Amino acid sequence: MECTRAIVDANGVRGLYAGFVPFLGQMIAKSSVRFLAFEVITDAIDLSGVDREKNKSAWALVAGLGAGTIESLALTAPTDRIKVLRQSLSAQSGGAPAPSALELIRQRGVSTLYVGGLSTTLRQSSSVAVRFACFGKVKEAFCNAFGYQEKQAPTWVSFLAGGTGGAISVCLNNPIDVVKSRIQAGYEGGIVKCLKDTYKNRGLVGFTAGLSARVPRLFLSQAIQFSLVDYFKTLLG
Image 1 (cartoon, rainbow, N blue to C red):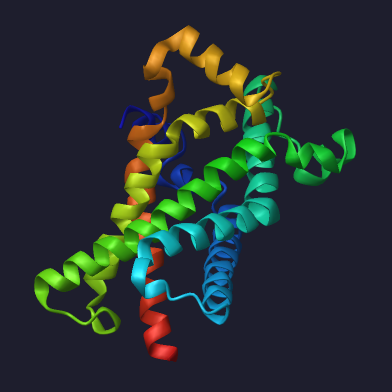
Image 2: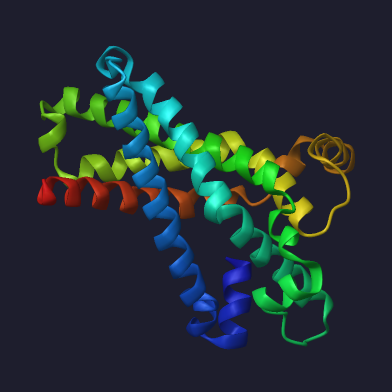
């Protein structure tokens, strides 16, 4: 709330939407790749003769891991690197505008896009896997409790199930997100060293950084995404 007040005082409500257009483009692309990859992987599992119905949560976890890995390598790793690096350079530049993505590539080469790529992939694949697994489990529980058929459940069921999965995934993988952001911002050292340094300097509290902002954001974003995807699948079906 203090951060929100500072932004509004400095730039008005418009300041809360700084960077909205590129973020919107990133989210559209990421969500499209994620859900497409999940559907392709689950279809491939079905075609292989495996009966996913016997253990839906486990297979949702497997397909989610694959979808998260594809999404991360295709989009999340490079776009997150640019975002974090620009924020870091902007804070150091004394008011000068942060370099654009093309300028960063020209200065540092294409390989700069994948600095911190491993930690990003670990975070994204585990996060997406947990979201899909939790979504299926929570939706099933709600449908059983209220007597709905899963394919005909109302939108609020998908909304709560998607939001729950998003919130749980954040709490489980926040430590790797802290490490990812530090590496992308310029930390010199591997994942293990970064984990050790974070614990040494701040203890376990250091791994909770950003949770107060990430939990509500991911709850809402995943609740909206999953409920809309379910709605459009039913409509188009």
